[in-house]
Image (cartoon, rainbow, N blue to C red; front, side, top):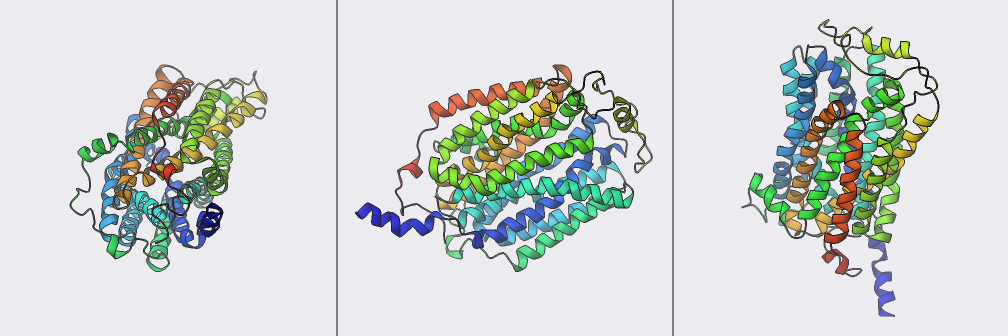
Length: 465
């Protein structure tokens, strides 16, 4: 009887407080809209100023590398001074970065703008900490999953807005940059006037003697008995999944002959799945299965999806035209700086003699376990991290988690690109699938039940301040 009474008394805490989470979700979504508007344009933007492929890769790595260094700093500062001031200041930095991007008239300005935005982009750790402040252990995975849903929505809407801006402006790349700045400005006002501080003053500064960032702190986190393995899993899964995000468009181009607009549809398909998983299903799955089992499931699904992707048949889509795709890749667009950048591209595209539905059907099917697995893993791992450290360490540890994710995002296109070119287009995905399978074995043998699984209903630490 007493157990039933206890369960009934704590039942209201089992549901996520969406009213409390909504401002954080909207702020993150609006902030990400700016980022996702810019991402598809950066390679052409850099090429228009004469950047080599290596320089374009370096530009792509600038944002995650700076985010890698800045995320723990912003996380620790939010533990000391509160979430709101750190969010506002970092969003101002993002706004400045986008303005500089729109005003760029040379390649160095592109690097400077991405560096500023990368430093400011570490505020995702602060948003995650605000989610942690506003949830219980039972609802935390669902709450953190909403940040992933914001990413998914952003990656659906951002490229659409960029496409519309370029169409209206006759391919003026400054327009999307200034539109991204407008979204960033909106996020600043939302944070300043709608977001309510989630970390009470009496809980700030408890860890004020700790350094904001050092490589020693990253190593200490890796050997932390409660979360070290989780951080390793976070880094490695993102190394594989990040390679998919960066190389998928090139893979579908060379394997299926899909052009830019066709790839947009593929990314929208993936984004819809991620939004559904992280915005709706993950909360139910977490309460039913627990975060540890979600980690197992996410690793297994990623392994299956990556291996399936690697074995996609090389068959052009039914509507494929080799001549039209070659023309699209060879030029025909007026870029700032008037430097022809696509005429000398050496890309192996399919022949028209092999067309059909098998290739595109295969790749869309492989995207399902990939998107579900990727949608599960990050919020489940971060949720476990928050439950296995002390309350005053949450912001800093989430910052370290974001740093490892950013480092993986920076390395993934560099390593995957070399493998793509030297070994073959399928190699990054096949190797990634094998690594995910090995990580699953490691997790099953080493990721033991933590204190969160020993805590009974109503006794969970944290949340609902």
